[in-house]
Length: 386
Length: 79
Image (cartoon, one colour):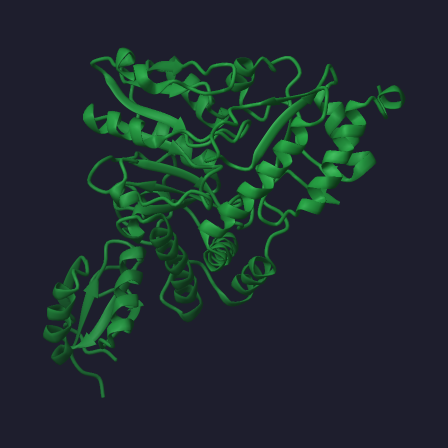
C-alpha cells in the first residue's frame, strides 16, 4: 500500500502518538474537574500540550490556544463567534467548505461577504484588496495553503493590509500547521485555526484555535461545564476555557502532544526540505507523462506537497479507484470540499485526483505512482473498467 | 498539627496549571488543592501554602508576572 492522501490525514502516525493516547486513557482522569491525583494529572497533561503548542506557534502564552475538535470547529468559532449582522467580510475562492458554509449561513443573517476570484491556476490577486474595502469591513479570512493545489498565500501583504485597515485576519491553517514556521505573537494573524491530525501528526478529533490576546474577542458557540465559576449563570470569559465548554478530548490532546514532539525532533526545516524534494520529483515525473493535466501554480517552490491532476477525459474518481484497486495507491478524487476553487480551475464537473505527500513517503513509492499514472494515461485498464 | 494556611485562587484551570508549572520550576513552596469550601463551593483549584510562605511566594510571583485571581487567608485551621 502506498499512501498519498496526506492532506486528508497524515499516515502512518508515529508509534508514540498511539502510546501517548493509551497512556492518557490509563493514567489520567478528567482535566479541570477536581483536585485529586488523576484529575490533576489530566490538567497537567492538557496544559503541557497547550504550552508546547503555544511555543511551537510562537504564541504570546498558553492561554491564547483553545482546543477544539478540528479546524472546521475552529473556523466556525472564528466566523460565527466574531462576525455580526451588518459586518462585511472578505474571503477568497481558495476556501474550503469549512469557511464557505459558515459564511453562507452568516450571509443569511445579514453579514456581507465578498469572495475574491482565483485565476485558472487557482491564484488570488490580492493587489486590489483596497477596492473591496467598505466602511463596515471587519475581517478577512484566508486559506494559508490550498488543499487542492498546495499553493501558499503570501500572508505578508495580506497581513499588512489588515493591520493598515484594522481588519481581523483569520487564517485557515488546516494544511500549514506543522509545515509553516508561524511566529504568531509577531505576526498580523489574529485568529489561526488548525487541526491536529495532518501536519502535526496527532490523531483525528483534536485541533485548536489561536486568538490574539487583547485584540479580538470570540463568542463561544457552546457553553456549559468549565471546571470553574460554577455558580455563575454565564460561561467563563477568560481564555482558553471561554472556548472549551465540556470535557476535553484528553487522549486526543495527549496524541497531539506526541505528534508535535515528533515533528519538533525532526525539525520543521528538515521536513519542508524533504517534502519539497519529493513533490518536485513527483511533479517533474508527472509533467513527463502525455495526457496529464496538472492544476496550480508550480512556478513557486514555496508550496505544500500536493499535486492535483486529471488524465485526459477520464473521470477523476475512476482514476483514483484504479490507483487504489490495481496499484494499491491511495489518493483522493472529487472536489476536496473546495467548490469555488474547482470552479476556478475548470474542474467543477469532473473534480481532480489529488496526490498529497509527506516526509514519510519515499521516491520509490513515487516511482510506482508515476508508473501507474503512465499506464493509465496510455489507456491501460480503461477499457476493462471504463 | 494543623496551622493557618493561605490559598491563591485562579480564574481558570489553565491559570492554575501555569502557576503550578512555574512554581515547580522555581522551587517555590505550595501545592494545588480543590477550592476550599470556606472560600467558595465552586469548582476549581487553589494553591495552598503556610502563612509564613505567603509573602516570599507572592513577591516571586510578581517578579515572574504570574497571574492569579486572589490571595485568601483561611480562617479555619487546615492541613
